[in-house]
Length: 265
Image 1 (cartoon, rainbow, N blue to C red):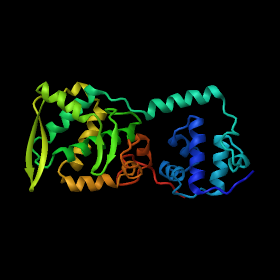
Image 2: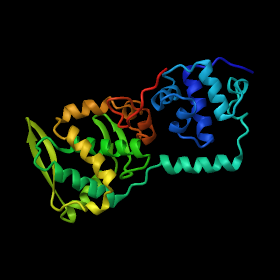
Image 3: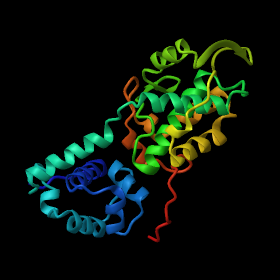
Image 4: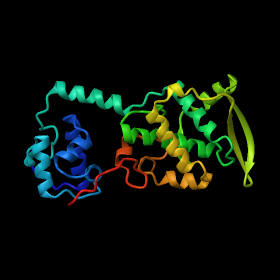
């Protein structure tokens, strides 16, 4: 039985079938000759998909329009069980970050080393530099940088287990914790007592971190917090919940770090 679907429901169904077929947004967008940001907006339910695009999608993703508009979709789709399990495992591998503690420590040391003389880089700014380094890298390369999990808290994204890691590093003499004041506000800063092991960082990883530092490390705590609150992954996540790295693919400028070719629609 056909039902009337909202834009959001259409986007969700397209996303489900695309993932079942093992296609990336980039692959599907190229196949139907639209840009990846446009497909991302369709999947989010923020952009209407016209009938011609829907017909193209039905051919590429191999579904009938009647089934697509039915109440029990996508259960009616003929997707092999083995293929579905394989894709599901791949999605789990991609979407569930695994913290690489040694990599995280070296990224932290590298950021602090680069920002050691900047009095504005207290905990608030540091958390955001880590967040944007991780999420920008994931958006660009579809791989985790540190694998840290970030939670949406009132002052912005906060990396989990950071207190434990910093405690270990202070105990080992890698960091020094300093309580200071900056513009009349109490501030916790961390000073690096040893250099980052750059052999732990790929050139592509270091490049992304450097870009984040160059762009944001001079910003005040309030400025970088306000900026992070408008980043889509933080914005659409419920308070107190972990922020999914997959949401980085739905960013738009100025947050998106990918260079897209303008589509002629």
